[in-house]
Length: 76
DNA sequence: ACACCCTCACGTCACCCAGC
DNA sequence: GCTGGGTGACGTGAGGGTGT
Image (cartoon, rainbow, N blue to C red; front, side, top):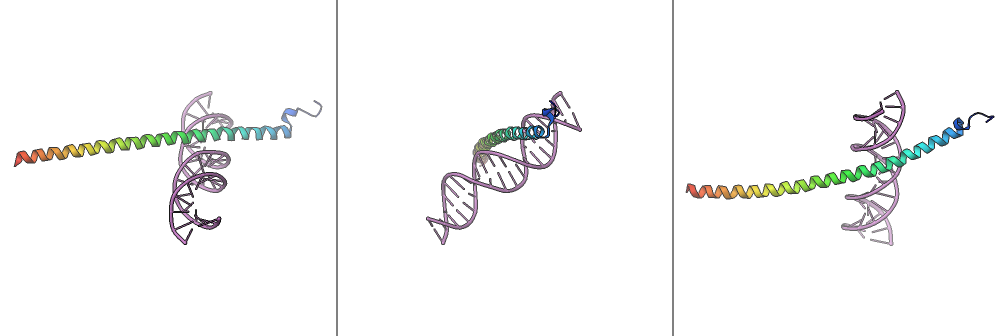
């Protein structure tokens, strides 16, 4: 190693830099994919919950209506 | 057939935050 | 402080629907 350590030569540093960048991009690519997948799942869950609550609401409204009618009949 | 719009999935960048 | 992971914002290309 007459011309200094090749490990820290400018060329090596540049290669190391671009290798690190590629690795970071790759990891971030996968992270973004996973992030979107989780978000989609979360939204689907929320939509299901909305559907359930809307049904519950409908049922309760019907129940209330029936009770009101019953109550009015008694009153009359 | 073509131009135009919409939606979806993707890749990248920038930022934030937790763990070290 | 540095590092790595998660996520919002943005730009882009592909694919499908619609009006001309």
